[in-house]
Image 1: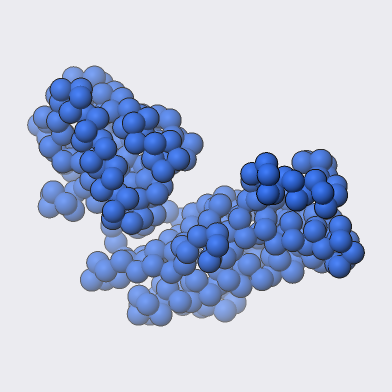
Image 2: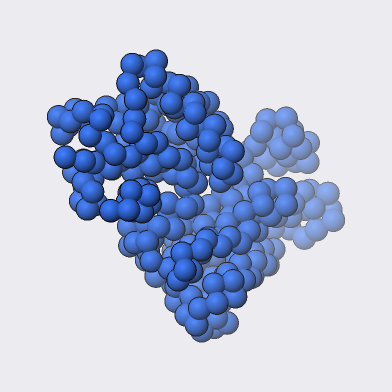
Length: 307
């Protein structure tokens, strides 16, 4: 018998599915983080190898019966980076005196898109720490909007919300801006209550800027004008992502799924975005994802095998 393994590799955990060639799930397991740009090739290869072993042991199968392992992971958006992990893993398993039939690496966003719409046309808007949008048209072509990272983009993301929130706090500390509830929340949670501490945290202590996003959202929910303005501006940026993707796909109706905590959890940010979509983009329909990214990896593997 032949099998497929689809893997969703995240920054905190890795989700693995073993299926038959029809995509029926036979085993599911989890491992540690698999962002190879952060963890390194060797530790990530070890995590992947252990997951594959778990599948083999559970079904009492050999590695030769696995036709393909497809991993979608953070940091694999460029083909050159994906190939680094493919080669790194090949080197790792050769040391284990074994070999896979086929190992393919794709981006985490790509498998999320396949999973969200079960391989059919559609689009996903990802707004977590960063932001990016992917869409698939009826011809199977993949389109992208955003994803330029924290220095050039990430509009509407947790990083962008946090950065603007901290900028507002810095202006308050300096006397250049109005008082904001964000500064009160920042002091309560992180003990940051002066320009000196803020500068030290950001430039010396590698402070997690995206972690301030929930504080901006909380301040906006408490009717803080500064925070509300940030919410308005950042949701406008995500609305622009969506309208741009709609024009790229050239479909009368754009189906979209939201991915990422700040736009999938119920809060003033996600509610504002949903309201703007319904009021300004009547031909855009927001849907729930149909499958997990790991199943998206399985679906991509099926396409490669042509089964």
